[in-house]
Structure formats: C-alpha cells, structure tokens
Length: 511
Ligand code: C2O
Ligand code: CU
Ligand code: CU
Image 1 (cartoon, protein in one colour):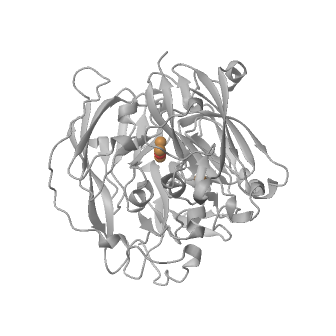
Image 2 (cartoon, rainbow, N blue to C red; image 1 turned 30 degrees about the vertical axis):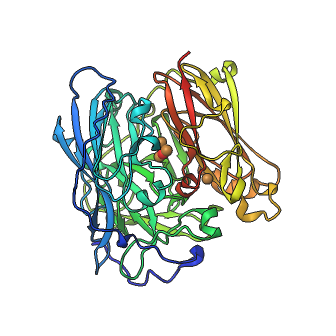
Image 3 (cartoon, helix red, strand yellow; image 1 turned 90 degrees about the horizontal axis):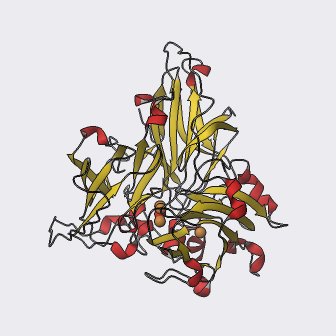
C-alpha cells in the first residue's frame, strides 16, 4: 500500500553535507548502574496510572532495503487501564498516551541511550520537577520518576527529550510521542472518536543511500535555518496514505519537525474546519483555506469525507510560502474515500468554554515584559541578548505566582543586520508549563511580504503553548502563572536554534 519511489536522494540542497550518520552509535546493552529515584509527589498515595517509558536505540523498516537505525520510546503500562498507551504500528514514534483529566500519573523514564536525556511533557501544566528541565537530565542506565496529576483540558499534547544542546538530534532520531488528554466536556460533544480520531504527526528527514537518517547542522546556512529534510514522514511513514469512510473525522495535526514550518491545505482548495489548537478545543470552530503549522504546534481539524465521491483521492499539501525551503508545493499525505454509506454528520457549533483567563483581562495585567529575538554574540541566536545558562535567571525573568502577564516577543528581523536575508528567521516561541492566549500581532513596515504568505494560515484563537513570530513581527501573549513555583523554560522551538542557546529560564516565585 505504501509505495516508494527510489529516487529520493537527488536533492541535497544547501545543507552542506559532511554527513553525520546516526548509524554510528555504539551498541549498548541495558546496564542499569543505579536507579535515581526522585520522588516528585504532587498527589498523595498511589497513582491511577503507572507507566514505564524507556528510551533506547532500535531500528525500523521505513524504506525497502536496509532498516533505519532510530532512537525510540517504548512504553509499558504497569498499573491502570492498558489502553492508556497506544503504539503506532511500524513507527519509530513513541506510544500515544491517552489519559483523562485528573489522572494521577507516575512515569518511570529509563534512559538506555548512550547519552543524557530527560522527558518534557510539552504543553502540560506540571510542577517544575516534572517539566523535564535539562538540569534534571539523567545518564545512561538511570531512571527519572515523574509524579503529577494531569490538570489540562482535553487536547493534543506531546512529549519529547529536553537535554541541553541535544534536543534536536534526539528528537530527529525518533524520540517523540503524542499525549492525548480527554475530558467529560469533550465526551459530551458529538465529535468523531475511535478510528475516526486520527493522529497526524508530520516530520521531515534527510536519509542517505543506506536509508539512514542524516543529521547535519554544520555550516552557516543550517545554523541559520535549522535541520530541514527533503523527505516528509507522517507518523513515521513516507508517502502516508489513509483510507476513510464517507463520514466525519477528527485529524490531530502535529508538527514534529525540528525546524520546518508548514502551510497546509487540501489540494482541491476545500476550506478547513479548525476545532482545536495546542491547548485543546476552540470555543467555536473556525474556517481557514490553509493552516500554518510551526514546529511543536498542533491544530485539530474536522472534516466530513462524505462530501467526496467514493474512490476520490484527496491530498493534503504544503503550499509554497516564505518559510525556509518552502518555495515549492509538497505532498504531505493522501486520503482515499472508500465506497461506504454516507453518514449524516454535523460539526458542533460550540465546542467548549474558555475559563477563566480572557484577553479582556489584559487591561489590568500586573506587568508587560518584552523579549527581543535576534542574532547574538558568536553568530548565535539570542533572547534579549542572552543565551541559555543552566540555572541563570535574570531579574526580568522572574514572575510572581498567581500573576497575569503580557509578554511581547519581538523578532528584530532582517533590517538590523547589514547582510539581511539569512539573518532574519521566523522563530516559533514556546513557553513551558502553561497555555497562553495570543492578544495581537504587529508587523514592522517593510517586512509585510514574508509575513503575509503565512499569516492567512494563522489560527490565533484558542489556547497555545507555541506561537510563530515572523521577522519584523511583535506578538503579544497573555498568560497566568498558576499553581506551581519553580524553574521553567521559554525558548525557540526551532530545535537547532534552541540547542544553540535560544532558550532561557524563567522563575515563578512564591511571594
Ligand atoms: Cu517542546 Cu521546551 O519544548
Ligand atoms: Cu514545552
Ligand atoms: Cu528560532
């Protein structure tokens, strides 16, 4: 069913191939030297769900011929409902978590990689010791234990490694998985469930002629742009195909790429009903002709395949845009409509209610902070001129527990550098530990062109943990620092920018 044309290595483009092959990792056996049990109890007593998640080298048959060496998460339910983990067949991706809001979760993360790692629960509101800060990274053979109650609303969250300087290569090797949260409000809606609720994790990779993944961030250009691949994988599979019934589906689109920004659309121009963003369902569905999906972002769409005749093949494509390496159209996945009975379906008019943080509160916020994104010393990306330091928190990076704040990210754009061009890059900015609202965007005069090509696909409604900040743009976000004090991160989710230091701590202080 999955066809593959053996001509894929033609474009090597501007990545300056020196060739680091992940294949050269030493073979390791599971030598558990000691168990570093770090109790992080935020709930009393026993968990409802207990899981062992192991990160280790392995291989996957991605193409005909040699298997591809990958790093992957393997999961096991130790206690609780066995369907809390769903593995994706034939994929290097980690198992999908399926939990209900309120679940008391314990995860034993076992590191069997040949280097340090730690797991971050991207988008979840968790205590700082469960957030996967790089200072908590554990060595090969060690275990880190997470204890937290899932407090977030129904939505599509995810998990991935977060060791300092190595997040990019570890995610690229295959370490990532979805974390789906369900709640009663969602269950009361008539949304597609079961085999009509589909994860679509989009990633790009470069493969060499031996089918091995190539991660190469040497050279000026790739430092500027990050790691861009010429092969698109969906759920770990090239040329992804889905057979659908003539009924409604919920597609959970996630950009799991290191650096690539997508502008997604149906090839026939059918408008897209968006029902959710990073932090779960929107209040009401919104309609877009295309959707812009930056690294780490999720957008959920609702689509009624009953609108097409049986036998129709429909493609989701990446439209040309100003995003790096996006000059041409690219297929993402193909849907084939089966000859089934057409079921009458309706998209709910109201999905959820967003409480209690609302943009109207922005008028009486405690503080406005601004963060300028620019090229810093040594040609490395920086935030307010600073780069990541494991424990350093500047005075303008300290917030009070309970406060509502507006943060402004200003991407200084190309005008600040005489060389222009490559010096201005889009930055998908991510804040750990919470979901925020997007208040407003403002674009500098002269920078409108690149901006406009992606702007039509922005879905700024709803809750977000990652927002794309285009060159010359200021984006204001509104958020509240609730429940937990401690050390969290904010950073660019272009993983190569992050690994190069475009990341900082922020501290939530308990007054
Ligand atoms: Cu998904 Cu700190 O990141
Ligand atoms: Cu995160
Ligand atoms: Cu960036």
